[in-house]
Picture 1 (tube, one colour):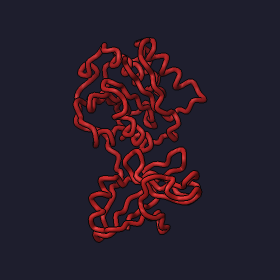
Picture 2: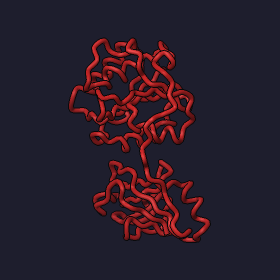
Picture 3: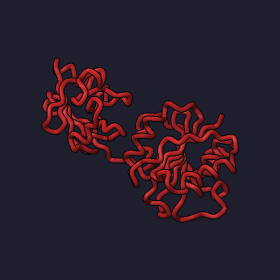
Picture 4: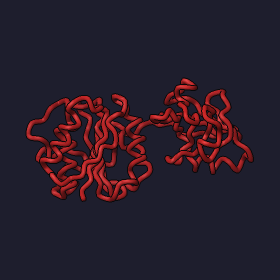
Length: 262
């Protein structure tokens, strides 16, 4: 079964997502279309890059991921098609592929240029419908090889995302990278980062700014409802949460908020 996933900042109020699905089904009526999310914040490239990285390995090989968060639509920005670890991505060249590019095995990367695989009429404001959706459908149907879409490239836009840092061998600093629907503050500090750091300190306390959250727990339920907790979440990244509440709302925190382990 050919799987095409869609992610965008379109929301579901308007016609945009349905138009993309219609284009795909005209080209490949048997495609299985999966909506990852259409609730990315408008122009939220970092947010979309994070979500793409989280879903990447959970879809079967040969899946085609289409990501349309495209504030530069109609400009000279390129559209890329990449094959990483046996899966495809079609997206604008604006940093959306950054985390997949870092973590997955690159097999092929092309600039999408061949208009044969575009919609007959090309809008300057909706390349999701007119370029990315049809290209994804042709790939999923097996009707095109990547070299037919355009020239190879070894360059793509990479987001300048902050990395965790060790300070004086006693403090590991990072920041909030993503806030989920529950108000959990997901950081850029991974379990690997913590395991590399923890041998220096027998006991760690997690801080959000100047506020002590406490040690790293195994589950949200290790603290009473309404209390803050730090866990390694399903993303294998450090999270700060409120058991049965919202850490983002409780602490007034958002993406970029400083986090430290001491």
